[in-house]
Image (cartoon, rainbow over all chains, first blue to last red; front, side):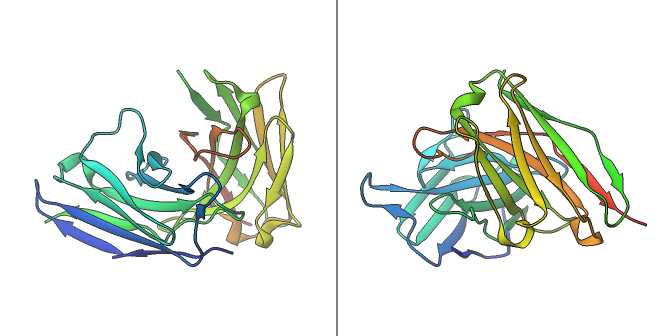
Length: 113
Length: 121
């Protein structure tokens, strides 16, 4: 199985400041034939289902604010919130969809400092 | 709009089975893949299986492989998850999520509201 490891487990950021979440996979999730990284980021607010933010590691889902961005390739990925807003308080998960089982990271809880 | 609507919460006794439905609307169900994910209270998301709707191909997580069946009914655009031999460890919120499938999945952009399954004697 591909193990997804997120860091940190939680972080507190002041409003308007940058938040950075890391996700590392135990194997590469880059498919060389199409040069795509099979890595998605989801946001989950309390009491709600997850919502897709980013797919192919860096493509923002329609309707997602541009303060959210994804980067990285191979085994190391980053989700960045450029200017944290109050509504961004949530748990963020990465998921690889390169190979089954489609594994998730452990989640990163983002709070306001 | 594109949505998945899941069946209501369930309370089951240990050793019994539960079946959860996930009805799709607003998108081409036959061109999608549907994953099932569960989440115990305060815990991480846990992938348990998926189905490629067009072909009916399924794969399951090893931990539930012997007990889980995922099906779809193309005539009603509904996916189903049935888990047998329930124990307290299966108590969780169960989510279905769909994503476009064209030779491979593109991540899962439509999520159901979740179905709480409680296993208790």
